Length: 288
Image (cartoon, rainbow, N blue to C red; front, side, top):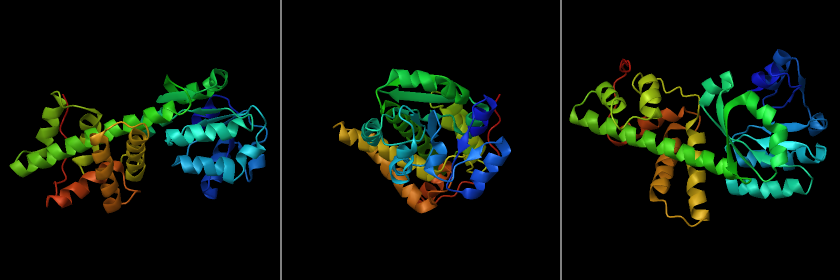
């Protein structure tokens, strides 16, 4: 994403907790690296892409970035953050005259690299959205206005809940079928030719689950966190969402068993062990 911003002509200042990564990116792109919040004092737009909303809050309020920014600087949080926390953070930043836009993304590493992410945009300040639109358009080819501040993060959590529920259902179908004697590759082929097909069955299962690579580029811990956000949102707004609660529980348990750093598609290994199964590694089905 940083490479795409540089390619679009933006003058960049970068910051990462991994000093080696920060210096490597700064060297590659010929841009400045910030050693302190003051390094961002001249920024017009600050983009955060961090593991959690708590991390975003720590950078802005704990590390002191918000205090170093000029009034009117727009912060764009592209992390998968808690929407309730985003609204609270927006109120704090408003006291500094700093508009906050939530703009989480979907599309994974491949679309991040090609600048074709789907971006869900929530904000209370439409003028701020227009100011950062060129930045967003350098990163994604589909921008979806979702409503007020926090709505983008809510939409991202709901999307990832649906994705996780779909993966769970497909994984259970694979385990059920394998126990009954069906070939896993045949199951995936039939699902993809039928009404059970999804992004998971068309992409993740042929390329990662069947060959046992589990290299999705998105960690199990992050997906478990996002589904947990969706479940917490349901509770906060008094919606009975039993499937969301159960999906959150299943992914928390898979995270505990496999480790949060594992690729998210590795969750099936936990469910295999629970059922005394281990699917064989084999090439995915050939698509016509």
